[in-house]
Length: 493
Image 1: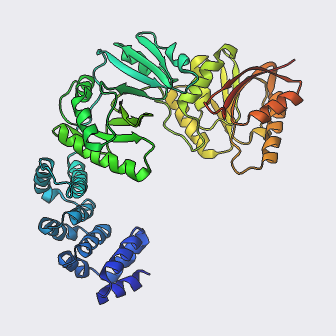
Image 2: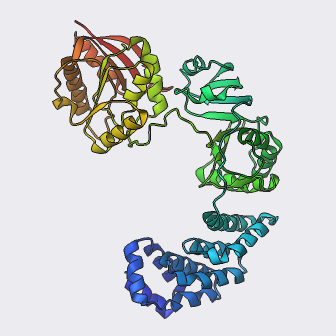
Image 3: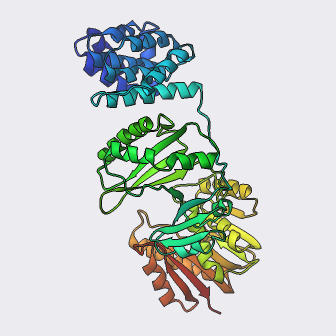
């Protein structure tokens, strides 16, 4: 395929079509190596196209040179970039240069960056200026990384929102020991001058900072102007004891179609840079601040700020996860709700342990004497060993099937996130729950307890009806739709 496209390109009859096809093929390393062999060090077929009369031919030729990645291309690409008059093509040269060593041209690229940052583009130019700025920054910041801020304002007073589910806000609220709290629909509002203890509460999802502008118009430039006039920069400077530039991204939670949300974010982010005199730098792939705009019923946006500059230690142990891993704050909530039914110094088993999160969060609220984790997925077991080591805990992990597991003594408790059905038939999954209860009854002491998190309420209720060996102590609905539930089950003597 590469040879055919190359031979066709040499005829010059369908340049644009051939260049686009070749560019797509070069996403594969094998195709790149094949083309380099065909060229035998003679790249003129592409370098000469950098001065072709058709702009899109020039742009695609530049992108192909970037994918070929030869350092000899830096000079011709930079020269062509400097001569290019069509704004919509200039970022193509920069995308190619980003794959090469541009250190020789860094001073001139920085000058161009400063020039564009001070430029007020016309409406028809804005999209292309945004693209060129993004590409320039990728090169300049690769060579000279931006300063990374670290949260410093621990002694300041803040208003924060700790987001939770809609049912257990009070669980998080009761853990706030220093500050005024108010329960909201989906979280807890806290005003506090003691933010360190807040960072240790494990049951909330995110900590967000509200701004003093509560309703932004759903238009990019007015929204950016309102953000710039809010206490946003004041908050960032207070939190970081600084007054320099911050890298941000805009997150839009809205009923808008995806393409409109993306367009809004780009236009609003660019306008916010201008409104703040570039103190805020739009950097969607390398940011330290997220400005989240949440659409309300009336169509306006509520702005919230999330900082990625904390040394947050809530789940510092959790370096490894797999696709099926439970969220750590959900595991923490499960452990908190189950706490009245947990015994200290118990012998615990998680038969589907994944990367160990349930066991570690259970141990946080009620220390165990001995913990065992079982899973058939080797990658999960490897992750569990690493996470547990980082947590400074001791868990015995076993890579095997729970239903073939044997042990020398019985367990006081089983706690687990039950596997989801996936592609398994309903009949097979019902049989799985039957076998699980049979095995659990075999492994638990006479006064044993099970803490089960599951999205199969009916299967669990069925087993409880069919078996005299277990009784339901407590049931919690764990989400607004009632899909996931937590069951506290006791074994009967």
